[in-house]
Length: 114
Image (cartoon, rainbow, N blue to C red; front, side):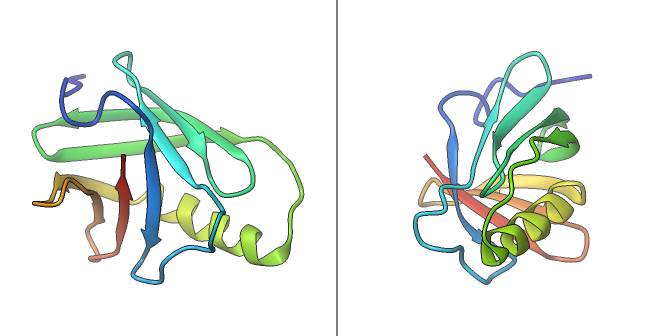
């Protein structure tokens, strides 16, 4: 299992777009990757944690669980969409503006910035 030292590791990434539909203002969805192959963050309402593997631009993420906090339906819907896409991520890239782009094989993306 390889974990690319850069650019995933470091401060948290703040998600600003899920599947081209933006995010709810002030929902503060985040991701952070650690050297030991784990990731965590906020899925919009609940904390998410799991494991990842990366090599080059290939990336697989395995969300292992979330907390079980109830929230308003709009945030729950956003969270479900994010969690579904995270489990389908196959690659990533950093664009010219510094944004992290997580991509699925179907072309859906999650965009985050530091």
